[in-house]
Length: 483
Image (cartoon, rainbow, N blue to C red; front, top):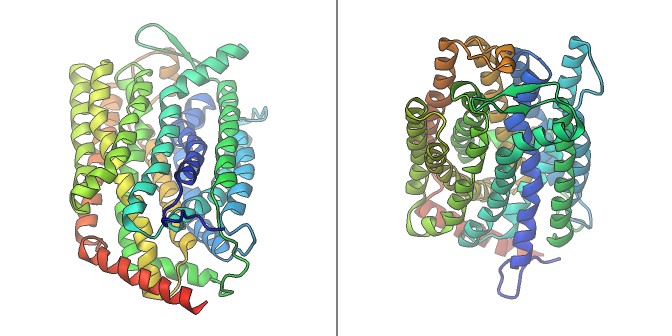
């Protein structure tokens, strides 16, 4: 099946159907990224250090697991293509482990609970890979034109931001709602305004089930609408596990891309990891986290305007904005925490800069991923979309893991006491200062590092990108004429 219209462009219906799949996918991802640490520490009572080490250890396994999944997808030969079949399998399997991750199945023993949490988290990560790698691997194959890629690439990113926006904005309210609905008021958290927020296990479980329904529906729209060519008649050359790792290591532009993307992902994930604790303990208003989540709408705006900005400005300047705006936003948010710590308007304004920059970064790096795949094809003679995209999947989870490790260890190091939080008692002055440092200083440093890598090490921009596009199109023309 051919994706293209007679004009050679991807039909709008398929563009948006593909993007819709990212809503549920990123709703799943954001509940884990934004609330799993809180669930483990404050709801289940597990130590921050244990959770941080668990997050980090699971990503060590992903360093092997993700390229393996990329290799499997690249070697898949079916009449349905090589992406959609794994997208369906991964979605269904991940849905099961996602729900199990947010329920203890009645386990009371702390040691058994730690083992259960570790196993479910690792299985969740593995099954997420089964779905995530083919999804993003499919994207570069929707078009080979750089300008159309810029317009296509922002669509799934906007929908992904919508999923994250929904979870981060309404997550605490949804968890509280489900707890009140079921009568589970076992874990109240007092707020500065005297209100009470319930974060019991039942609320997390019900919310996870609701997200899974959304997840399956969204992916169902993608796989039923977007066309994919059969891979039964494709070349029989297979990628071995050794080749999969070699592809990642030998592609110098992929290595540079990994560096800049990892640094920026760490910036945003560490920010999101500490935000709920910052607003809850430093500002004494946990509901500000929902305003923080609402500000993700500016990330969608950044993605929406990315094609326009990228058309008028060279990519290096776009990425300078992408990294500079979050730095400005974080500096302002830090200052606001001293002057007006409970101001909703201040949080929205400060986060507008941060998330608009994040949107520009997502747009830029999504296009870079497709360019890196083209570069690898020209340099090594094999396209290997899924193996290359598996590096992106690993980076996203690696950033979440390192952020989780730093959050867990950092909270213990600065002396965070979950029992004080439950009673509405203020944390020690040193703890509050430590949370401020972890929330702002480290993300700012990482944003600077990301831009410096893009500027000095990443070469696929300007005239070099124009030449690469010409080379890959000539290569494809030769391949088509030889068939």
